[in-house]
Length: 112
Length: 229
Image 1 (cartoon, rainbow over the protein chains, first blue to last red):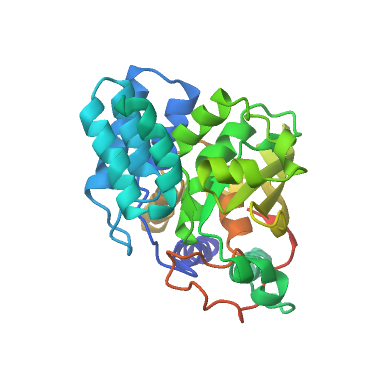
Image 2: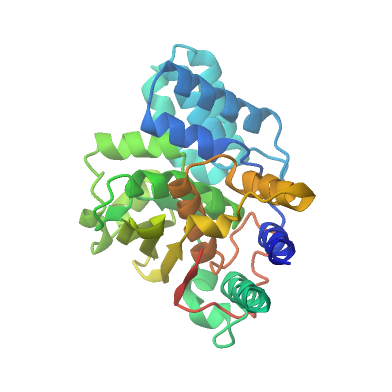
């Protein structure tokens, strides 16, 4: 009985109140690993996670979550893939115009 | 058995009341009038202010806060970029900002509001490995410097509440669901995630949410919440 109630509880928590605006699948885990041990492997895992979130936005908004395209762009630029990175920073601006000021500041540094 | 059942039911009710703001009292527009007035779109998350003795709590909360904040409909500045720029600008110490005007930082980032997280307590008792946390989330406007949102939570988390790995189909289902919820994250990440979720659920919906501007008549949750996570 306790277990059945517990399942109901879990389902209720996971589905209550709202459906997700964005998919952030894999983010918490990849980000935590990268923070604890920032190395080539954890960075690549984070890049892969971000790439999936950018390529396949499955939330109701149908866009990548705020900040993800920009952070992916930043990681790519820092690892030498500059043109792809800059493109992603511009993409962030196009889907979230309120990021323009900050992103322009970042772009200015790398575009020179 | 019956008694345990009652305990679970009552905690279920408690969770719903914390989660969906069913506690009668002020409506959201009464509790958070300035959010409805100013309609902030973008939120800058500052590195949490850690007054606890736990050294990892700061990173845990910084990393996990973005998800629920964006799900509420707000634009949140890129986590990694923001942190590096703040460090570069010697602005990593949030204590310097919390009591001061935010117009400069607002202008630099183009942020409408700033979120401060104060970790008052994050401790683990050796007995049964309970985790006890006390957190405060404050959102301030960069335009008016008004406090738009201020909510405190005191929670305890005991690993045993994640269910025991019982036998049979039901046991397996419990395992799968628990796995899906925690996605193999560490216990502490899970605690951070749940704290964020519970405390931010009361935040009026932002521009990108379908509830934007429509939730003012909903009842607000308590300003300070307590409970089991």
